[in-house]
Image (cartoon, rainbow, N blue to C red):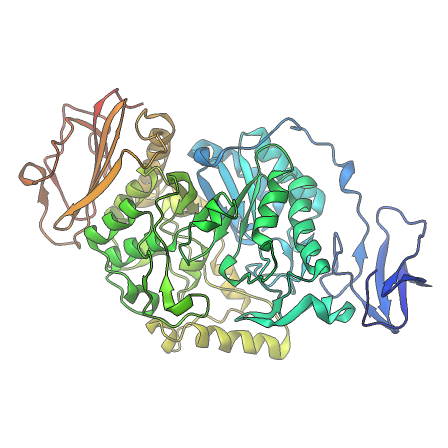
Length: 582
């Protein structure tokens, strides 16, 4: 143990206390005959203290650690070696709400359905142990211990193993920019894990220049990928990972992960729009908020909060598709500590399409709503509009991400929820309102209480509704779109070189060209009740291909004998020429 703050150090093993002798400056060591299942706590100056490196905390983050042997699990698919990013279709899910049971085992039973849908990569929201029984996971404090209410570590291994057996990669969302407000015991061992050189809206700044903190982070990434055999990591809010070391911790993380062998991918959630994350730090991809924001403003007309910074409309969406993201160095209208001179972004020219992770929903963009409502829950977003936006997302060469239940336009919301005790819980409730006070919905009394168990229950998916009405119709479209993405000779091309987009009024066009032919998506973005768009009257810089490959409202899938002559608001078509689609 490294514990510069303590003067007397011990360990309590199965209830018996032992002193740890000093073996070096601030360092203590003791060898004891313990086996799998042993429970222990450290004792610092007489105070029992949980192990921040614990591999499992069965009684929660304030309790004893359990000794594991992660090497005893018998992997059934040891030859799995991952997927390249250009083959990934991500499906983000939260273990606690993906099923009614909220466990790894229950989620594992649903994996064949995700395989049949056509997704190829599962992305789990954070699993590092956090306080309480329920939460999103972004307030984790014990980075090496999977959250106990979801199941045992062996159950998590079985989930990953089963996914690999189906040909599905599994990614994990990790939080390396802050620790949660309850249960972080690192400072009991040393104050130098943290620094006041940097600040975060979520707590003390992590000092990545401190070797022990750096090892804690890089070692954690290796553990998830080596011991649990995850295929990659999604790094939460990397703009908040400030580091003044000679080698930025993100670059070191990428190097260590890629050195593990096989295909291990690193994705950044980072709104700064800086290609250096890929070109210099050698991460593999970046979540692109701009695409979501332009599509959302197009569908809803919302102008509050950060949506005021986007134009929306067919022209706004076309600009993002052409450029990769919207902001390339322009002034950002809102104050932001992570944007020098409040200028956001750089040109994305060096990046190929797979490095852009696009989405029309994710946990944040739903949960950042007062009621956690999904975009298709809004009155102004008709089922046709949602399906048209889905056709755009899944026909682009960029890497798509779906959020659980999106594929059937789930009726269930995904509000923010937590389980903090006492005064801290009340502070979380009030802090949520304050954090999003610039959004109109957070200014009234309709904000769901994140501490209420009923709020958590609202988020559980209703799998039974998938076969009903508009849910079934949307699910069928997602199956078709993902099959085309996988099999169509033009749509499976992942290059930006043959991609262009533009707008004619409220109609968006996106054109893919390749040696195999041409595909053109047309999406009528006008509001419900406005006039249909006659395709024969369009003045486009190219002739429309003759074959109907897909119509988002289910008319004439792949049927050239029944061409679509007009698009009603929300509808989209994909037209084809050249080698026939699958």
